[in-house]
Image (cartoon, rainbow, N blue to C red; front, side, top):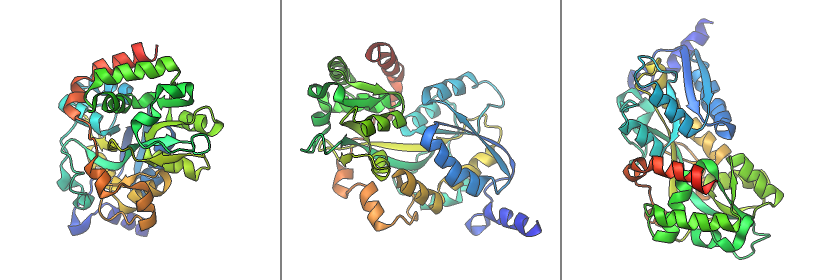
Length: 339
């Protein structure tokens, strides 16, 4: 027992003797369900937090629901969560609303290994990928080379999008129809044209994968990481980086200002950046790492990452714009597009 306690204590000390935070206590992590929640438990909770004495509890619900809950709890001295897993645009939004802490990177020893463009002040980036063209090569022998070629009304109900990706779906349609991710009115018109033609809307990533596997759809748009994961599961699908330039997706974590266990939150963020965690998500989920020492094998890196030329053409989302239009976008998506 003494040896185990010593090992746990050592695991909470970073290079140079920096403490990662007080061990033990209840740690509530707000996150999506499905594969992502399972992999957080597999790669972060059980290997790093539980041995250090933390009781990790996952609070599973969608992004909008968790944000609404954070806003409702804003005036409380103690909120109900210590960490929230969110997409990059949403991470910015909750910070701008004054709901989350500015990140103190001095409390995260592993942050020294973050890539230069992966160090925002509003949260810690964990993994990233990009929106690509997805298709079944048996049913569509000629590979589409652009978003516009796959999101075409001629395919009717043979293509689909995912409900929870509403923001990126609108951004992709805007890029096709208006030449910019912020041309959302043009994007809405294209999406409505696709919807009238029979475009399918799937509630989750897992439901979308089932649609591909059963042949209900021939493709659509999706994160490259997911495409690789589905290939590994035996689903007949190929991924192509669009010639318009891919739209990135970055997933990370924020700390609510009224997090009950602030030390535990920082311990969690440090664990997110552990090389073994980053490698685990690359292997199991196909997402690229945000640190320089992840040790991702070259062959895997070539499959999950993007070339320098592709990164140079990347169409990053305008966080401020999408924050200002979030209510309008979500309302339109739920009440008009899905109606």
